[in-house]
Image (tube, rainbow, N blue to C red; front, top):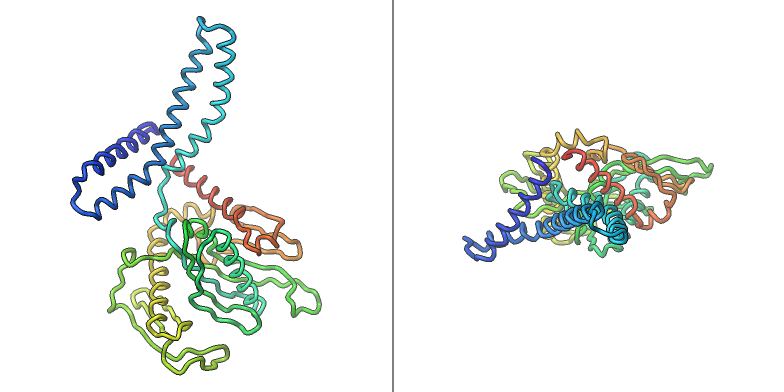
Length: 357
């Protein structure tokens, strides 16, 4: 199918939806909501197609004017000036339309579950995990997203063994989905008297938060254990069995929650995390073939894959997937991630365009 045929198909579907919604001849409110969303999604695509076709039509008219023997020199010069100015704008219009036609990641508009765990490096890795979490906290603040800590395991010296949080807002997963993987830090630990640089790591997982309709979980597939919550070193923090551990037996996924004093609230939080992990598991299985083909681009999102190095002595951060190095580590750690995120999104879009071209 040619590009023009694709454009015609999109415009035809848009007009069909417009007529369907105007007729109000739909079986249910669900049909109306579904078609309304599809119509809204196609609106910007059709606007882009119309703008591109309008520009192409104007270019043809100006080209004809430039070669028209009946036009005087001044008219031809004016037409040439307009032609050159418009010709510069067309590639941007084409790219915008091509991007709008790319297959959408259905999870992009979802909220996200952020999981950070200390990796190799002992106490320094736990301190780095805490630094990463504060980095994402500040990034969420700059985008006016809401961040809620769901589970936190501290080391007692300011480090985090593990932290799980939900982040909600517009386009959260679309902006954060490339953060999954191993983050490595190179710096002199505060406990290092000899000034030697140590390397440690933390793993980050960003999962789209699933709704009940996204993942069907059968109660008979769950084993739910309750136990007494405890603080650092096993110290009891309450006297009731409020902590919850949920095991999804078909997949072997285990989720524990103990931050709340209420067993009911801990179970609800654990189910949110479980749904997100199951949803991500399904997405990865579904996209495995495509991810393998594109691994050289922005990676597979595998948590075992080293994706970024934060070098404190040299004040730089390097994303290994796209070979991008920024010499503004202090700003990145303070939540200024947009240059990294924008570059990763652009690289992903370029890979997708290459696939469909």
